[in-house]
Length: 207
View 1 (cartoon, one colour):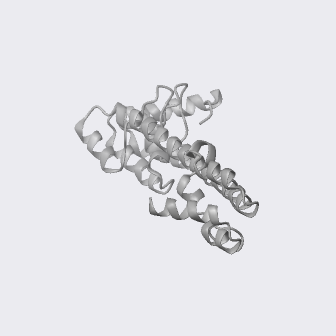
View 2 (cartoon, one colour):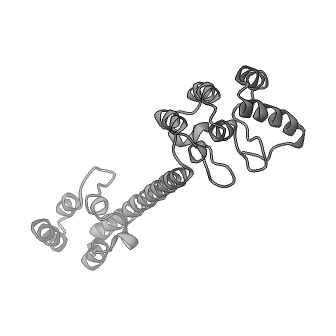
View 3 (tube, helix red, strand yellow):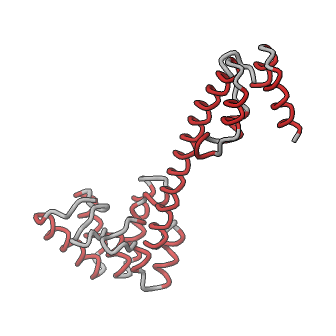
């Protein structure tokens, strides 16, 4: 979220004071009228969730939680779990058991947990991208192996067959490659009568 504009500070501070004092009807009215319930409201990029949690204002929290349910379905993208500049969520500022129970009931997590889950998502993304790259590489190497069969080049075929996953892509994907005729290595080798390659593949299939 972007930095808070100075011209909004007075409005935000007024609502924060209302939340602190428990003047909930007026606080909710102002937030609703201005559509600012999910904005960062100070230099630390706290939201009204952070403030209502800090001041233990159950009524405002319940209203915010209802609004939040209308937003993102992904847990860590919901405003209840927005982190401020200190990487803290509303749950991190909950001082009473009632506030903690309410927030936890609605899927609140700590800033530390948010960071952890984002890191896990990033790792899953990069792992997936790495797998895609290895699949593509395996396909390219598989095409070279079919060329080696066409050229009756046993030495090249064996070299490509034995490449590790770093150089040759996903091994299983590579050795089970099919060509544009939907034929396997063994089928293509039999078609072209490449006896040495056929013997090698039969040996590999039984070893």
